[in-house]
Image 1 (spheres, rainbow, N blue to C red):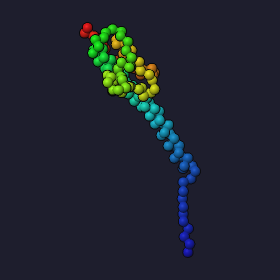
Image 2 (tube, rainbow, N blue to C red):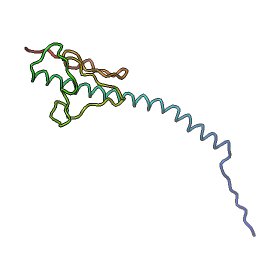
Image 3 (cartoon, rainbow, N blue to C red):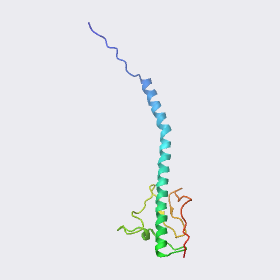
Length: 126
C-alpha cells in the first residue's frame, strides 16, 4: 500500500498578499522613522548649542568680557582638554557651529537647528 501525501504549499497569490501586507506596513513606518531620526538630531544639536552657550558664559565671566566680543571655538575648546568644553561639539546632521559674539546665541548652519528660546543671555555685571 502506498500512501499519498497531501502536500499543500502556499500559492503564488497567497505569497503576493503576504508581501503586499509587509510592503504596506513598511510604507507606513519608514516616514515615522525618518521624522524621529531628524528630531533626534535636532535635540542633540540643541544640547551641543547649549553647551557652547554655557562655555561662552564661563569664558566671558572669567575674562570679564562684555558686549560684542568675538569668540572662536578655539577659545572654548582645546585639544589638550584644558578648555571650557571637554570635546569639540559636532552637529549630528553635519552642520557647522558658529560661536558668535558674547551677546549672541551660538548657531548651527544646518536648517532648523537653533538654540531653544529659554537659553541664557549674557547680562554682564561689569
